Length: 586
Ligand code: AMP
Image 1: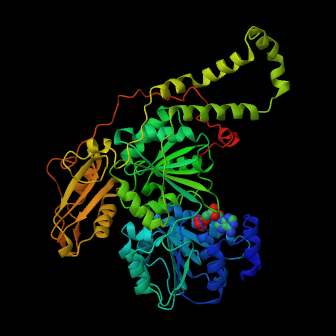
Image 2: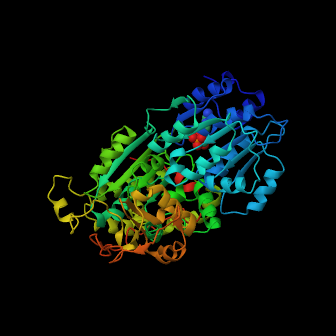
Image 3: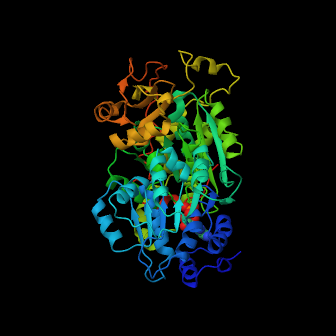
């Protein structure tokens, strides 16, 4: 099927052709003609990377009446990054139409500038929920001409505690509007939105329901907790051309893993909520332009990352909520490309793999961290390949050659090569000489036994030393729930979701874990906050964060070797290296 068969205006067709879109993706083929011909609600079950922005963006633009400057389309999405990206895409789709204006509004930035933009007239607003509610309350957004509300990544927005904001927005838009909802998964909460606000929605599923992209291979590696980082290094070293996104659960872990990778000479940087917006933008620009090879991120910071060509998503730790696996892994294999999603798990987490397999409706392959010999061989071959592929700039190098040849007069070709590779690899090889097999015995093996929590407790393997557990004097009987707690914490403390750990809502009271570094902020900022008129009375639980969990010390035995800093890994900002090399990805 071609784009010109879908019923779009010529100016839009010409704009998308300039963007390099040749043929519509499956979700675009299904959604665009339907939305152009019908005034109907729609549910699109599709993960990121399937082309869903154009699936709703193109018909939305096509329907805009540019003779009116009033807002006709609202797009609501979970994060600032995604908001900016969607607005940018819509601007591109409408670049050849006169008088169509798209405005992005999101939190964490000056609202008055956004108000001025809206007041100049905008037919489409792309917004994060909180900021939109704020603008509605200030009566800065005129909603009576809104014909279409798009909820993008609805499951993510609900996970992030935006349920009430979404309810409020939907209630304040005209009854006759259409709602187009996109979600990677059909959770109970998403179904509730559909039931309450949509009428006989047309349903489109790309792939199976709740299924991830077939172009992603899912691998998992079972390692002992103390070997997680060594295993990560092994996996990265075995894929010298990796362009990867590594997920950690907490900001601390994210910073720690990125620090270690940088110290070991990898071209890696962290992305998490402790960084300023300007720092985050800088890291993202580097990653997007492929100057940065490895990005280590928290779930929240990585939301809305839509970078093409990511080869590997590595779950350094599985997400707290297994449903998030789909969001993470969807960052690879975008736009029809292939990708690998790799989970590092400890011996107690196999059950989580089973649950994820059910959610994504596809199987994981159990992989072994390659042996030091295999890793070294791949690295050497990769370097040799890049040498072989390098073109010789004869004119520049010729004048130095006589002196160099003289120096090597008595050295055989084989020895020259050995010496050259030794300069590059000695440190690397000596590191791998000392690395033991880090693959843990599988579940029936004896080694797992010694790894059970000393308290026989939870199968949750968070980096518990860094967590503080809190008590909340509200429970299910008070109408309190997971989303409410999360939203109150995020709204009132300015914390990042990644800083919040396990939440347990019990009948009469609740508990949650949070990064220890946030303790004071939580205790001070939450003191005056109540939930529907009831005091939360947040307190630290006795015994600190590791009270009920087997503590774990990070191994510092191993030398910090594998240091690749002597080698050109692109840290110098030379982005050409990686793409020039031959691919040896597993
Ligand atoms: P999305 O799922 O909307 O985030 O899109 C994923 C990526 O695919 C983005 O980089 C889009 O620019 C790209 N894309 C979307 N539709 C097409 C298409 N029909 N042809 C080529 N690339 C596309």
